[in-house]
Amino acid sequence: MKWQELMRRLADLANARGVEMTTVEGGSHTKITIGSARTTVPRHAEVNELTARGILRHVETALAGTESGNAE
Image 1 (tube, rainbow, N blue to C red):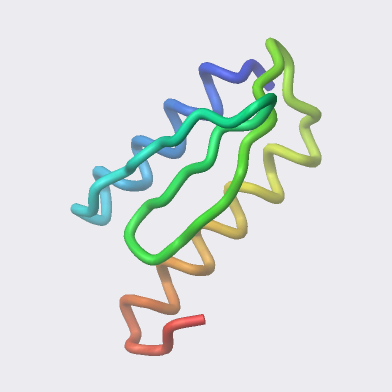
Image 2: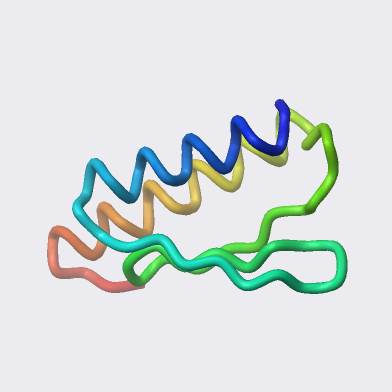
């Protein structure tokens, strides 16, 4: 998956939940916070498909846990 597509999907998740997405640029990764969910995204033109799926799943799970009142 293209890096820009992954970032777009993460932004869409934040917008759908009505929370802010913040980014901090590191050495070769971008640190992302969406609500209470935190993750890092490798800054490569192409992100491995399994890695991208794992990042999206992690953020969705963390946001779902926050909505139900169970913070991880």
